[in-house]
Image 1 (cartoon, rainbow, N blue to C red):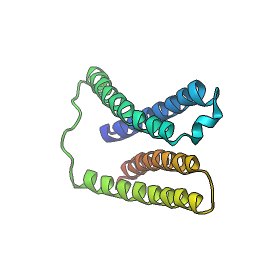
Image 2: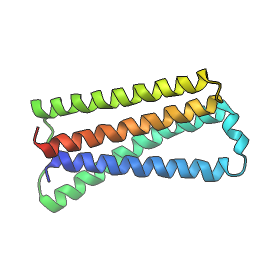
Image 3: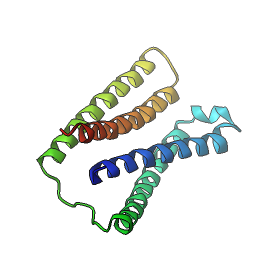
Image 4: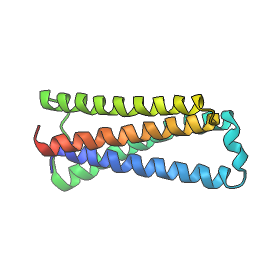
Length: 148
């Protein structure tokens, strides 16, 4: 497995674990006791804004740990340069991610248009961001595997 594939796989697994863990934490600590808290847009906004730095910090820590473990096992440094192939794969992954998030955004706005509660819109946006990120990493993995 190529180093880029390993990095992509680690990013994918890490993001899924972080997202799932955070959702379970918020659900078990706040929503279970008071389901009406979802109607509080201030709570939803805070929950989303707190997730962003947690995810970024966790990703940085995981990359550092991954680099150290990779260096110990393979005695190779991770490549720091991206060639044209890497850039093309990144652009294709961004395009997939963009379209999935755009679809999620349209679904979120559609949920408001048909009269659903605002927290449904926020949940759809939150999950569309998650799904677009996962599909972005899966797209990278697919193209690295395909040899494109």
